[in-house]
Length: 358
Image 1: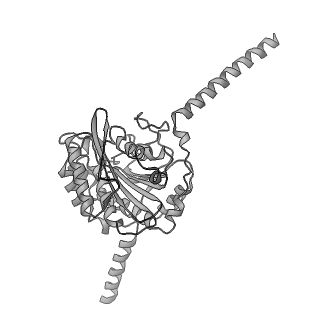
Image 2 (image 1 turned 180 degrees about the vertical axis):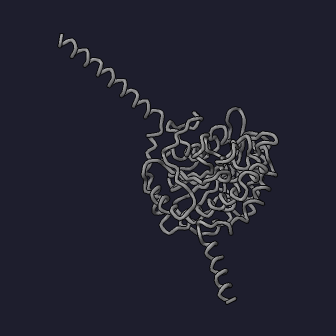
Image 3 (image 1 turned 90 degrees about the vertical axis):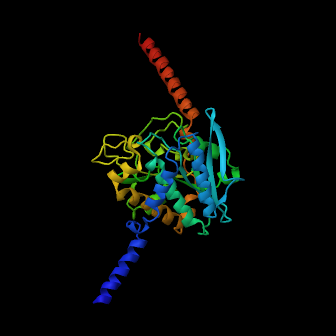
């Protein structure tokens, strides 16, 4: 009898370790690493000394993991709005043609004793670092770029600069961008790729059936930023994935929240009035979300790991089916011109017909 019970316990443990739905066994990286990261610099405002110190912290973490820089140096400095910021870029070279980029912004909205950017976006950064540790020796049939973007909060400056200055042989061969932003605080996990059906989106949807992550559909349009460079505004595009998707690059975005509430939906739970940047501290997240915060992080970690390790992943991602023309200013201007022209033509025809009746 004891042997049967022992066998059952061992079997259950193995099942929990392998299951995408039960991520409790993979929580070990979350809480301690998150606390360390937030405590190292709670003020990571874009352009601040704290943001620079955090970039140095991330560079050291990549060095500890023996992950090489993509460029000559780990840090990629850039100027914007008469100040400066920097991206931190690591690279796993698998001697492959294609690339997957895993990105998370590390700057935050800081408010003394109120917001230290625990959810937005320490949760994404810490999960990305764990993915780097897991995938650095995976020998997959694509290369992996780990990108930590600065100055996201002021209009995706870091990710736009990264793409604007990326060599074409890399840019043209990115098969998927994975964005981790605010993935801890919420009753539910959401993922978003694109509203129109695509080959890569269908693959992700089928893969996601075994995970506790909800697909974000078309029901949530959103427009609080005119600086994203896209006219199609959707809550699923409110992060660095917008920089990639407007260039026609396959994109997958994760965030946590509760879109069933009446407010925005980020950093929210049904029974609490927490609003992201007014409450984004370690203490509040622990009080309101408890272990759920870390389970969300672990589930994203498991989902991304299993997705990248799946057998048909690279083949399903190769086709760029998103047409960036739909997201550009000039396309909308052409539509407006055509509309005005048709309206003018209709007016002329109307008056000619009216005159002929007279």
